[in-house]
Length: 117
Image (cartoon, rainbow, N blue to C red):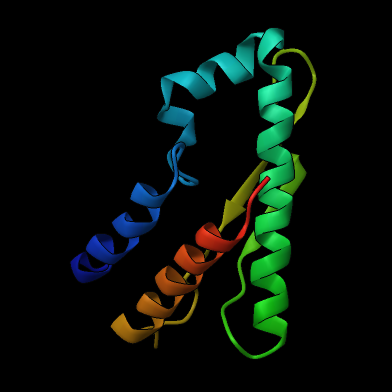
């Protein structure tokens, strides 16, 4: 990915207590993955991911946003057998420019402000 995009995408990471793309590196997330007493926290994150995805998807289908993916049961599993969800955004077009990336960032930050668990 080109360098100018990195700065814009970092806005997304900073908007989340546990960043969408970097949760694997977060020490708290390690507890969710390996310690069953964190199951309720993990399930709250699942609920948030679902609501977040539903909001962004409905905006995209109404022509007001971008499409992101919700990766659910097939993404990964905890050591105690609970599936882990993830939100992903893939830049697939070679014609993507800085304005397109800014649209993704804006829509994700909008959803972050509107979606509550």
